[in-house]
Length: 254
Image 1 (tube, rainbow, N blue to C red):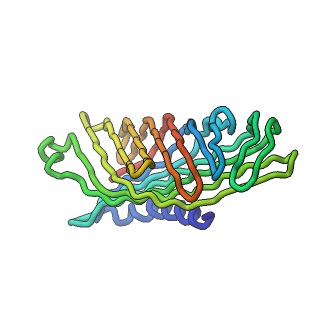
Image 2 (tube, rainbow, N blue to C red):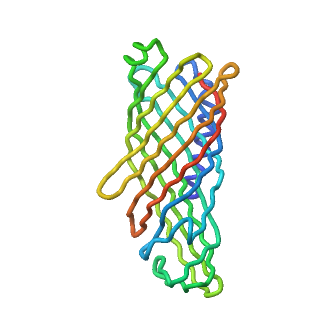
Image 3 (cartoon, rainbow, N blue to C red):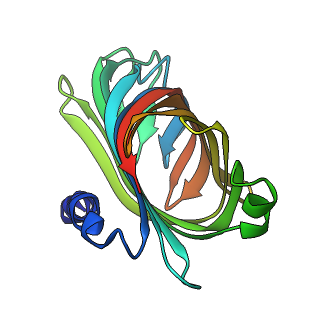
């Protein structure tokens, strides 16, 4: 999966620096920002679930993310690409023996753990032109489909006992995509995005809200809040996790 992450970032940079050369044929929005990710919930592999806050003791992390939207001409669907790195690590403890994978870890002996949940989105969507036309360009809505690829890796190590266990997993999650943009005045925009799916007892929701300011030319700066709610049971990995926090970003749009 390391090669996949490298490919994703190369694609992001290519879209940012190459696509402007054909901007006369398509529309483009590209941005890079930082997101403060505050994790909550539970995570387990085969054994009992561990509390992210009380046992794994993960704290908030600030990570760089990038996104690119390409408005295609004619009847072609528009494209939305987003890369969101996510990794937490800390030293934890538990007052009873617990199982992670095929290993049993000893109670009251410190352990260290890490969890990576990098995810990459590729969406295809259409705008609803009649809404934009009816509001004289002040309001727009988008609907489409989104594919999210999750690069998951979790590991627990207990150096004093020599016990360690890890699990790697690639998960493909199809999601619905919906978004809206409001431009009350030319220099300010208010935007909301929703990606989500629910099936059986699993669900994955990702909500983004941002306020965008265009201080000069094609450039913009934005601030907002992003919240993810994940409940999955896949290949013996059980997770019920929530990530939320503010973000800021800067970019340009044609």
